[in-house]
Image (cartoon, rainbow, N blue to C red):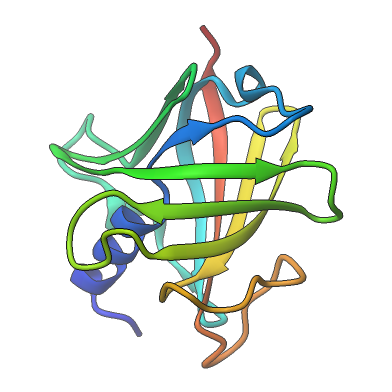
Length: 152
């Protein structure tokens, strides 16, 4: 079982960004407020209630235009990101804006199905991109599913 603090840090490092648009990309498709549905790290599914901070401050993702922010209570982390939806699966590159991993690249894949956004990526920067939406023991991968709460 992963310690709760480690999981919170991984989530904070793994999902925040300011968008950079690639040709053909429509970032407005991701616009809205998203709530955490599931998290899996190294093949281990984690309990969602571990991410609640008080009664109303759950983990959330807010995307407006090119702004993409992950919040856990009062904490947030920023990346820049680029997507390539023309690949199968669609690719996402997250570059850390600040902190110990500033300037480092996290390669991932994503899919958007209606109001469900799924991302799979490595826990550590500068690793190869995953090829499927799954994690296994010691894979170094995380799989996060978000549900759109509302759209602007």
